[in-house]
Length: 69
Figure 1 (cartoon, rainbow, N blue to C red):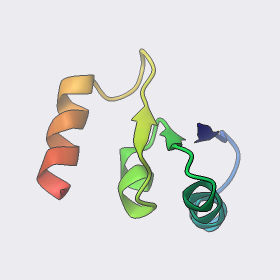
Figure 2 (cartoon, rainbow, N blue to C red; figure 1 turned 60 degrees about the vertical axis):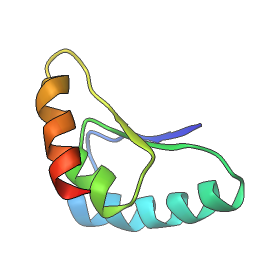
Figure 3 (cartoon, rainbow, N blue to C red; figure 1 turned 30 degrees about the vertical axis):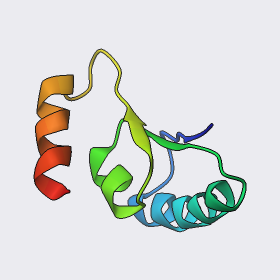
Figure 4 (cartoon, rainbow, N blue to C red; figure 1 turned 30 degrees about the horizontal axis):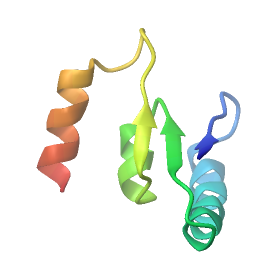
C-alpha cells in the first residue's frame, strides 16, 4: 500500500504526483491511498482515503463517495 500525503504541495502538484503514483501502484498491484482528501481520492481513482480525527466524519465521507460512484 502506498499513501500520498503532503501538507505543503499545491492541489495541482498533488494531482500531478498522484497520477504518477496511481499508474505505478496499478502496475505493481498495490493499493493507493490519499491522505485527508476525498476529492483527490475520487479524481485520482485511488483505492481509499485516510481520514484523521479532525477530518471529515467517516459517515459523511461514505455518503460523498457513494454519491460520486
